[in-house]
Image (cartoon, rainbow, N blue to C red; front, side, top):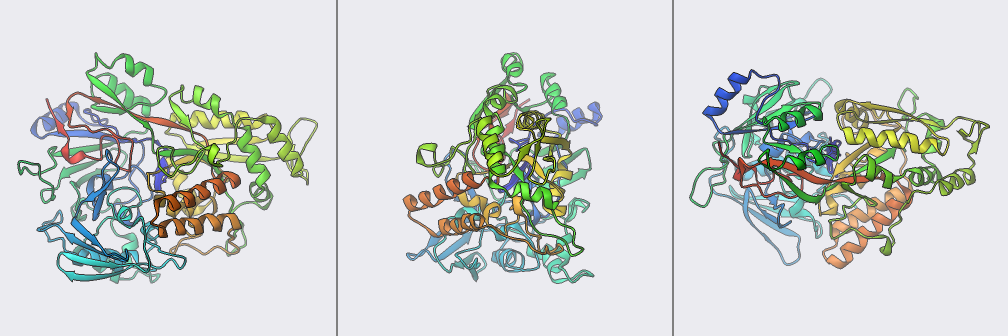
Length: 604
């Protein structure tokens, strides 16, 4: 659903969760202003910002949001953020057989990669057969294409240079969505001519060299893409510069080449305060409007010649999650200390924590009332979301319930009103979040205070987003984290979170193909059931039945609390009047000002 926000999905930092931290600006930090103005006068450009560094330039390994592939990548289909419908992208059309098991895509005529080479059905065959279906390549794209109880992949057959046929073992409802390109976990198409050699070649450990291909230290001229923009340069800790792809397929109604804007600069700025300051001084085109700066910016809307767009609740969730992993390393070291693992794996403990967090106060204080309370892994805007009246459990603030649950589970209080377990161990754990997100930092501070009221000591440590993501996906060295996933209207977008072996099944992460296997890794019955239901939901084509399947996943999730959902912000972005053709929406991985980036224009 990522982490600022991770991508369901990818990590939403990002929201930074997360909420669309792609922020446009005119002035480049760490840049000579005179030089910048000269360059800006020569070409049309707009500048975005992000609080974290890009992790990879290889789309198959992306696990974050926002990311460079929002600019550089496309798939067979795409999501229209206004209508919520799947539309053609690299594929101009598709046909689906009556039994829903055969899907034929027809590519647009004359497609080319950013280096001018033809984009053909051979690239589709390479992307799916050589990369996604390759057991030695751990890409989250696999999770979106596993079909049925067996997790089988579709077969793919080349018909001619423009047509391929996917043969599914059974009907698969989210197939078109799964192939919708440069979003989060949706599949983009990779260039065979540029990457095949790295898939075939092996490194010293016998793994495909593809695993280390197109890292962020790669010369951008070597990176071949099919999206509206290509990477022109990357300066660590400063910026990524994108240049218009001269071979991009889209044209406007008059036949003019898209995108309109020649260059995009993605400035890396770790301070949201600095971003807001630059926007207020007139240097930025766009800024994410957070709860902390909404009132101030709203007062300056007319004078500053900008408009604050409101897309409603952001597509994503903020939550805390405990590490439920019971596995250990080959050297015998457990992923989580056994004493704390017993606490975290106690259902009563997790439910008590949920009851002890005062989310209304969090909404009013950390979010200044600009948000909504979230009670489900599926966003409230989705037609698959259910309410408490439909059986969704809600954990309203109740300290007495929290304490009763703990006492009934064998916990006790010492004379200092500190919570101890049955063996006398003081209940104390570490909570981490991404330090760059001020709202989340405030949320974590309140959680620390709230849990102290039931005797739990929280060691709160906001850290750099990149470090946090490494703990969650690689070292697994964490106890409790506060972050978020970005989501969509399609529940299967979260398959890599909810399938027990999914790449973002963070609360009980299995080691991935390139990592040291864990010994004693276990999957709880309720955990397996959610995974089974996600598989079943993808099989079901009847919408009413599909909704009930995903309703049950929400009921189970809220009962067992692998994620304790908190409060989500509204999707608010301030855009200066000079940015034209804005079609703002909170929907989808390319929401806000980005989903129709190829149509944006900049006036002087």
